[in-house]
Length: 131
Image (tube, rainbow, N blue to C red):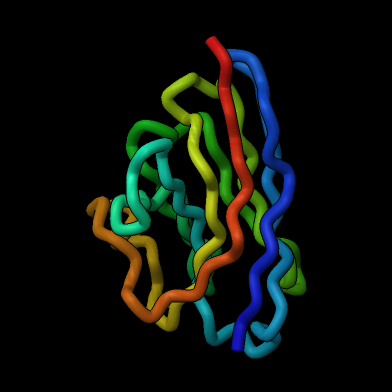
């Protein structure tokens, strides 16, 4: 079973940058697809929105509002997933979660659909952007 641990969150000013990391274990055979989701303050778990996803070919997808500002990547061993966030805005304030699923999450991000119910999640890392 895959295990996910996020880190790198914090508080930054409008226009600042942060890089999130997600340590991934239990995915040495690459049978899980990875993505970043976020949950805005006051919204429930069922309102988590996909921010960025990556598939086994390295193809990526982004939420329209973050395209050009955020970059998803993973290391060669696929043991760490990253989210570089630049030009941060107050509306990016949320708890960011690493997600893993048995299907590609690119479509879920592009179509703003929730992650599959059998997805795996990390504990989340808080990102706060002050105006």
